[in-house]
Length: 307
Image 1 (cartoon, one colour):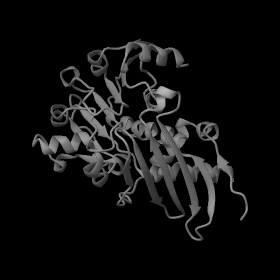
Image 2: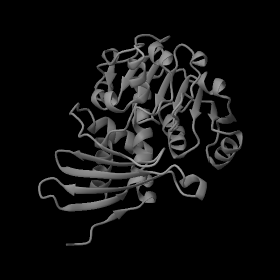
Image 3: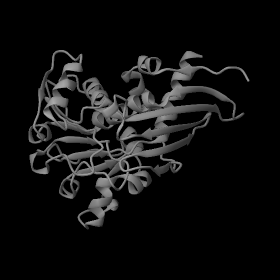
C-alpha cells in the first residue's frame, strides 16, 4: 500500500482557528445520531476512548488516552491518534495527531456557539483551567469577540495560573490571575477542566453571561452545579450525546432540579439560526462533550485542502 501522509500537530494548528470555525459552521449543520464512542475506564481519572464517525465521503476514528499522572512526569494529560479513510473504498487516506485535532475543534465549536449566543457587548473573558483547551479557548473567543479587554484565568493553584499566563503570547488584553468568583463574574466564561466537583461559583455568574462548558465527558465529572444548570438556558452539542455523557446535566436531572426536556437547542440548530437566547438578561450555557463528527470534518477539510 502506498505510504499515506501523516499530519503533525504543527500542520494541524497551521490550518488555523478561523478556518476551523468556518468548517464547522458550513459542514456540521446536521443532526444525525452520533455513533456511540467507546469509553473504557482505566485507573482513577484515566480513560481510553474510541471515537468513530462517518460522513458522505469519509470514515474516521480517533483513539484517545487520558492519563492523570502524565502532567506530574512532564507528559501531556491527553494523547490521541486519528485515522481517516475513504468511505467508498475504505482505503486509509491519512493519519493525524489526534490530540491536535481535539485541541483545535473543541474551542472552534465553542466559538460557533459563542458567536450565536453571547451578546455583542462582551468586555471580559473568564477561563477556568490552564491546559491546552484553556489556551485554545482564549484564541477562539478572541476570534469571535475581538473586543474583549480583560481576561481572568482561574487555575488549580496560583503558581500554575501564573505559569500559564506567562506562556501566553496574546497582546492588547490585560490578563489577570482571577479568583473563581472574579472569573465566573465575566461576561463570557469558558470552563476547561476535568474536575469532578463544580469549579464555577454559581452566585458569581451574572445576568446576560454566556458560558461554555467543555471539560467533562462522563457522569463522574462536572464543572457546574445543578443550581447553575437550573438558572441557565441550556444548549448542547447533541442531545443524545449530552444525555449519556454530560455530567453536569445528568446530575441536575438526577437531583430533580432540571430535565433534559428543557434543552433549548443543539449545535446544528445554532448553526441554522433556529435557536437563540431568549433575552439579553438570560444566562446561556453551551455544554459540549465533543462530537466525533467534528474531528472528521476538520480532518477531511485539512486533507482536501492539501491534496
